[in-house]
Image (cartoon, rainbow, N blue to C red; front, side, top):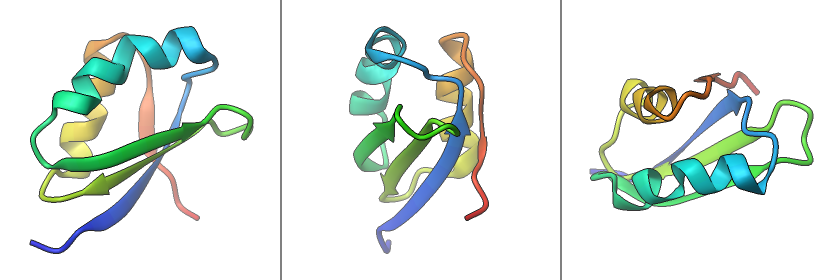
Length: 73
């Protein structure tokens, strides 16, 4: 399967928020890499997908009590 970057607008505002989702994103099947730009007003989460769907990433974030939605560039 082809790797592709998927971006999400989130409410992960700081390092503390990011640390709460880090382990789940690190261990999720189908994610090669991920990063978040907390300095961007939309708090953009970029996921390099190797099979994981947008819906699955959103669910991981929601389970931790945060919000994620597809970011339309």
